Image 1 (cartoon, rainbow, N blue to C red):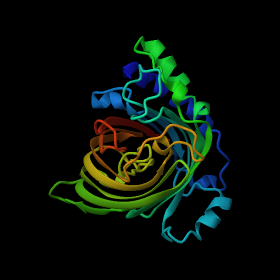
Image 2 (tube, helix red, strand yellow):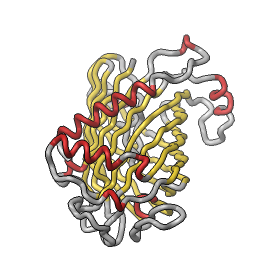
Image 3 (cartoon, rainbow, N blue to C red):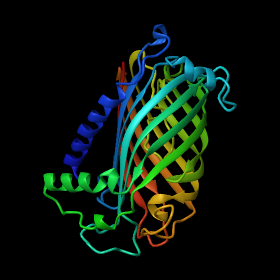
Length: 338
């Protein structure tokens, strides 16, 4: 895929924003100090190879302002046992699409030793709780895999637009199946600020743990992120498209310029990955997945005024037995706080 694909994804994410902004009216308008809109684009172009494995992802999210939560949500959330009692709640809505292909997309026939073609089109709704040191994220993704996810149409349209090789094997993609995944993650942040030695600068270490349960993904995960920079308390790292190291869709800005460098690692024990295992009730192409997968990521983020921009380079270990190489891809995230 190419830079024109990145631009096309940005247009698609902008269209998603129109749906997200049409969310419900909140109970307490006086607490609305401004929500955050984010766009994430992930593509294997940034790894030097294009159109293989996890080849493209695009996601748009709207995260409400702190405390800007409907009463019918905040009351049940106060009884969630793993949310901190002093955590400030936010509500998240999102829309996204992921694309997966084998290494050689010019082959029309089924490639039995390579992963299936697959698309995943989904909407998200979630709750985020933050007390400054602990971030809890509970999220439900509902969507569809298979031809209804429109992976073939998107990739073929973009490749025609940029006049590059046509993907020929989408007739072999996994079949239509409704998808549902429930995610939970917790992050613990330990922050050290340099004080008068380096005003505004600090380092933090943030371990995390989480799990996913559903017919699309089922796994347990744990990892650690390290950061160094200026105005670190503004967020917990940039957002990513799951499965991934978690960040935060929100950021707190006082209008000044901030930046940080980060590195993180995560290991996942995987019980279910529909994009490798195939359809839940059989009949589709599948490969033998690896039960343990690791991600290593490095990157940088800058924030100014109402904006945050980040880039993440991701190195992912092989996800199935016959995979020829580890995955390398990049993630760009742009957020605006209203």
